[in-house]
Length: 144
Image (cartoon, rainbow, N blue to C red):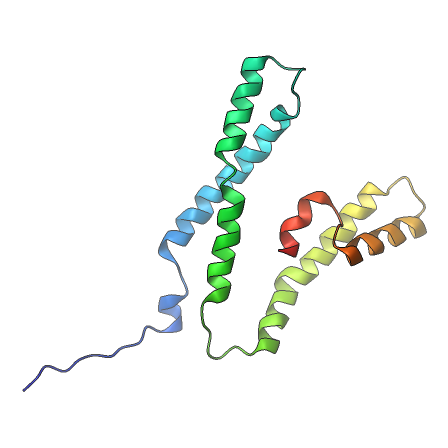
């Protein structure tokens, strides 16, 4: 008698975690923090010593891989097949996870940036910037 072949399909919970993805996220998060810290020194060329500037520049350059890795991880997670998720459910989930935070932080930073203007003008500037996708320079990743 032939042995029985187990055609077990991995459950969604088995497939949902990329083992190496968690390590990449941790390393990427650290690299992004280091990148932001080093960028402050890179833009001070001329006001710091050449050696210091080169150290900042090398550290900054060595951490540039982090943002593309986060984008690729997001793509890998989004491309994972989900049989039970409709297109409507997919977009509704993204709206709550990305849309609402994007709207909140866009308005927050635009009000901060326009704090010298009247409240009406600040809101007009904020609404226009959000509508064209340029609320504040560091929020670009929420549009990706």
